[in-house]
Amino acid sequence: MTSRLPTDPPRNIEERERAGGQGRGSTREPVGSLGSKAICKHGHFIAALGILSFVLIQGLFLIKADAPTYDEPNHIACGYSYLKTGDFRMSLAQPPVARMIAAFPLLFLKPNLPLENDSWKTADDWTFAREFLFKSGNDADSIVFWARFPMLLLSVILGLFVLPF
Image 1: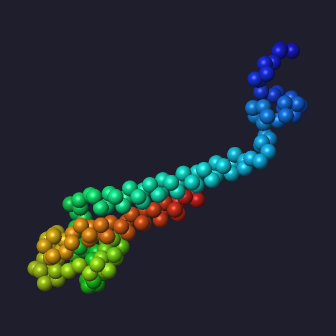
Image 2: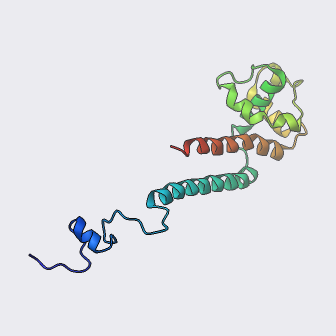
Image 3: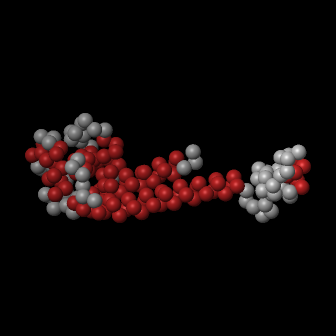
């Protein structure tokens, strides 16, 4: 029989019980412990909530600071025109739901929608978007912020739905 060092793990149940159940590979939890499974489960949940909180806070700073992308005015103007008029003539190549979600907060801002402009009549969505956002007396920064806000909330809400899995 070979000699064993005090740091060697117990070989069988009897050795483990003699060591007080505290050796490596022990199945006993220390008294007063929540259990490693409970800590792991809650730890993952807390970490995920921390990440989602970070996404929300960082997103709020970024949607305020970033300039509009080249096609963002188009999506915002088309979505707002869909909600205000019910007319889907602008950019039929894109599904309207995401645009309408983004434009929903604009209903409370009530920006000027240049329906008298020739770009509306000819369904020139790019010109109409520039006209709506930058040339109609609207606050472009505020419009872009509030159009981005529902998308940020949607990403956090979807993160909460994925969290249990």
